[in-house]
Image 1 (spheres, one colour):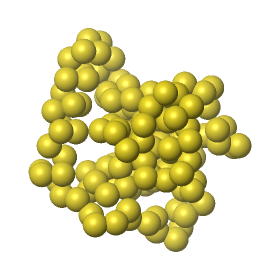
Image 2 (spheres, helix red, strand yellow):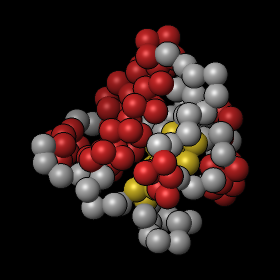
Image 3 (spheres, one colour):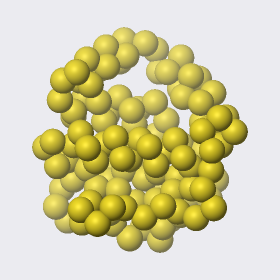
Image 4 (cartoon, rainbow, N blue to C red):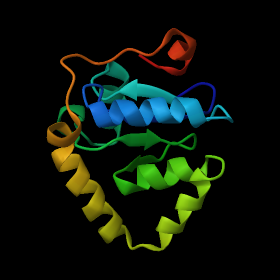
Length: 136
């Protein structure tokens, strides 16, 4: 979907935790591998619809990989850390945890993310130096 063959990370634009994750990735994406779009964007709606999902019902971040796979839940986090440098890459050890366990833990955080981390009234925009990494 992205013309420059970058992974496209879809995130909840009003979720404070999700926005922190995006800011973290922007700082640590030293190989310029990721582009970003809010789940509230038209591109997210279109891509998710193509994969049989509804963006308004998503309770998870998603990644559209350069080869066209759509990853959700704990697979997103595992995909991201495998492409980051050290020490973050060490978190790939979690691939040995069964996916059902990883997804259960992911869902527990996702379910309480607004209550614990907060929620913005509107989708937060990127800082000017990172605007080129966001797809609308």
